[in-house]
Structure formats: structure tokens, C-alpha cells
Image 1 (cartoon, one colour):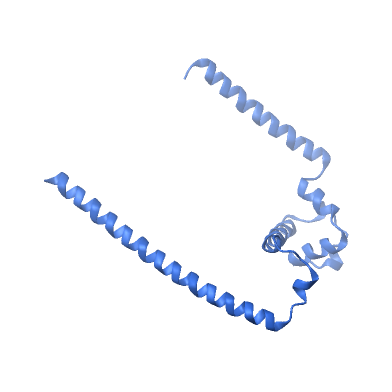
Image 2 (cartoon, one colour):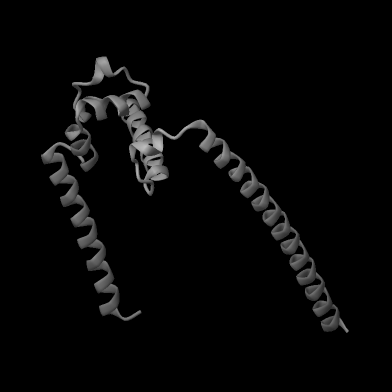
Amino acid sequence: MPVNCEQSIKVEKQSSSAAQIAIAQMRERLGSSSVARRYNQLNRQQKSMVLFGARLKPATFINYSFEQFDIEQREGLRAAIITMFDVSKSFGSLAMTRDQFRQNSAANDVNSEENERVTSELDDVTQATAELISQFETTALHTQTAGRAKKVQ
């Protein structure tokens, strides 16, 4: 590697670590991370949901700022927020109209039967796919073995 290229890489690494140090110092001066800022901006209901998910009593911790939690509590908050995010994603594409929640049980029974039929068909497709993969792997193994036998002869 040419000297100029090595020097360039060394300078990039130094500036990168200098940038990381500067960012860490700025965060320290500001006193919070982006997660802390967002948590601190939640309303009481949202904080209660996060606290409950973290197995922390909302009545006790509702007025805590993020910075007041210890490491173990913060880990619980992190896990709760991730879980809430996953739940949100699973409903994200649905129109959350009141009608969706007022459907009668007969309509749900039809949907349930349809879901079972689709699930059964998907299971059949999965099984057929597994069989095809097995056949493909067997064929590939035989082809590979035959190729090695020809090389030996």
C-alpha cells in the first residue's frame, strides 16, 4: 500500500475517533441521549404503558426522568419500548376504525374458518417445499459424488 494511502487511512481513523469523542462530550454536556429525550417527552399515559411493560410501578416512577433510572430499570424500559414497537408494527397497516372493533362474533367465526383453511394450505406448501429441497440436495449430492468419481478414474 502506498504511503499516501496509509497516511490517508490513519487520518480518517483519527478524525473518526475524534468525532466520536466530540459527540460523546456533547451528549455528556447535554445530559441525555435521544432515547432519554424522547422518553422524557412522553405524556403520562404513554409513560405508564412503558413503565408497566418494564414491570415498574407507574404510581412510583411516573415523575422520574429517564436519567433517574438505574441501569437495570433502563434495560427494562428498553425491552418494554421494543415490545411496544413490535406490537405497533403488527397493527401498523390496519385502518384502526371503530368498525374494526365492533364486528360481531359471527363475522369473526367466518374469518376464523378461512384462516384455518389458509393455514392448512400454507402447511401443505411448506411440506412440498421441504420435499423439493430434500430432492434437490440429494440430486446435488449424487452429482457431486459422480463428479469426484470421474476425477479419480
